[in-house]
Amino acid sequence: MPLQTPPLRGIHDERGAKFTEFGGWDMPVEFDSIQTEHAAVREDVGIFDVSHMGQLHVTGPDATELMQRLTSNDVTRLEVGDSQYAAITDEEGVIIDDTIVYRLPDEDDETYLFVPNAGTDESTHERWVDYRNEWDLEATVDNRTDEYAMFAVQGPNAVEPVEAVTDEPLAELERFAARYATIDDVECWVARTGYTGEDGFELIVPWSAAKQIWSLFDCQPCGLGARDTLRIEAGLLLAGQDFDYESDPRTPYEAGIGFAVDLDTEFVGRDTLAEIDREGVEEKLVGFQLIDRGVPRHGYDITNTDGRVIGTVTSGTMSPSLEQPIGLGYVPVEYAEPGTTLQVVVRGRSKKARVEPLPFIDTE
Image (cartoon, rainbow, N blue to C red; front, side, top):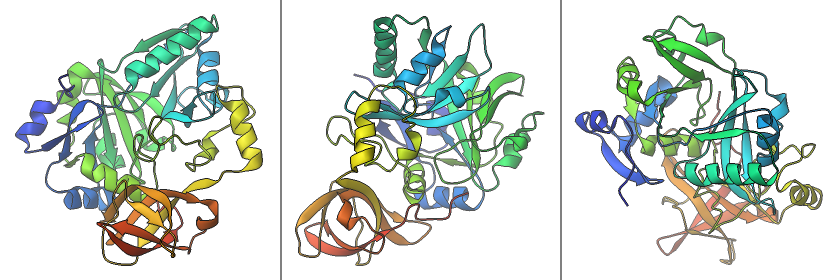
């Protein structure tokens, strides 16, 4: 099956980007180098093409109820222009996906946009439609992934280049707030959200205007490689690595995102998660730093100091900011306290590691 391509595939190629398959998409992994792009976002500003992310639009008299019953957070708290992080869970409370839910300006009814991860838009759309029909709710669910591009302008100096392309007072947006803004005569949805641990904005723009809007930003283009090192430093989950519905099923409490679960709401998986919340979990996602020389990678074994396997690395990298090897992985709760000594098996050799608080860096 051919890979899906973002609207700027040709532009990225001309810029000299290297590409990788991700979630069924052909995406730029780096333009100059991961270190250069990472530093730009930590120290100044960079722009990412994240058009591989899904975009689903939900409206109608029962849109709020449908969103409330299929995501783990409290959608009713959202005013127009608000957004929230949430999990999508099954009946057993296992994470199927994580997402950001935006409350759009109302059309005839309350209206939402939510962003599932790359390659999951079709299955998520099917899930929403199936449950809508099962519950006999009146809501329209549209998969608009192919209608819009998505860019992320991230870094401590992200405000200036975004405000420079519009007359809207985007600097006034608080974290997780969003609004429509006209950029070069194009209406775009602009949110103060991101996936790097830095300040910044995510822009959802019409697919046909992607080249026009992208060309307005004179800052370092960044690929998925830097996006990965940045989000690991920030302790942020990657679907398919830090949880995987098929190969590594995890609940929000195991994955460290219990803050996105509101047990006062009724959603699929709520009752099981309430029981888990009362009884606690057996394993938790932790951050760790290697003390010995080596780089942890996805799938490497985590052992205790006696050499007994107790977990698996889900994400790992050499941190460009800390200049230290860091990673994420699940371990039994008795090994989850910061300061605990672990070992990670790197290419057949045990390397000493220490559990660290998340995030690894000070985020905004």
